[in-house]
Image (cartoon, rainbow, N blue to C red; front, side, top):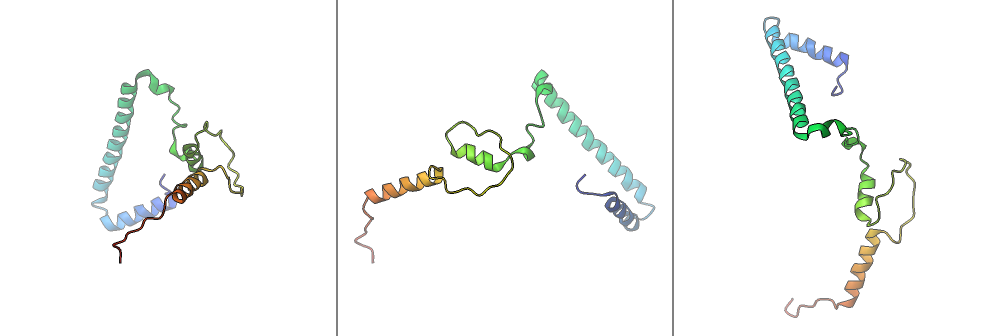
Amino acid sequence: MFGLTFEKILLIGIVAVFLLGPEKLPHYAAQLARLVKQLRNMANGAKDRMRDEMGPDFDDVDWKKLDPRQYDPRRIIREALSDDEPVKEQSAVVSRAGVNPDGAYLQRKRAREAAASQQPAPFDSEAT
């Protein structure tokens, strides 16, 4: 949870005891418990509201599939630049590939060069 180990939580607790003192510590501990309960109730309320709004489809959604940590940015960019069908899932092996002559970047570069070669360079006779 947030990268906190037992030792770190224990150290935070010891520092809190010294900073707050024994007379204020129970009050702040109770406030922390109330805050955690409110956060838990808010999360459950949001989940219940989502379940109500989505109806029976809520249980059919594969939430792990929608996890943003599973997206591969290289695949997303490759699919966005290509007009073909989406690329099948590939293994995470990195290899050094040669330059793709049919890549989108090179196609745009060739189109710009062809357009530039057909028009004369702009000339301003009033320029100094």
